[in-house]
Length: 173
Image (cartoon, rainbow, N blue to C red; front, top):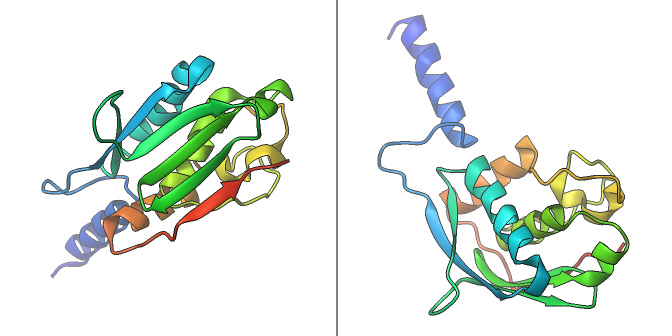
């Protein structure tokens, strides 16, 4: 094999491994969510789901379904936002009003909590560029997009045999 072909094969494999390109036979995993109980946060939840759909179109597809069987149930309450996973891609999200009252961005909250359902842990780095830094990035942070490492982890989670233990993520400040 020529050096040019070798480089092309390696570059393609690397791009596929981080979700930049997919294979023809690879279809995204469809996860259904019900946001009927999300009250005033429905539009923010839809926007948070769209973040993941646009960032990783070959890996996951979050589809709204307000009746029937769903993978993710999203509700609003007066506490702090949190997520409880039952397995990879399955669980419950609480859109807590406390964080919104304190000034945190609703779409960032939704994308962050959905990140837990997709298998990402909290990483309290304080960096706004890190979606999973959550509240540690401060109320001025409006970034709802996962960074490259976070996207790569979701691709690994859904591209292989990754499992997520049932966990509750409490995203307190």
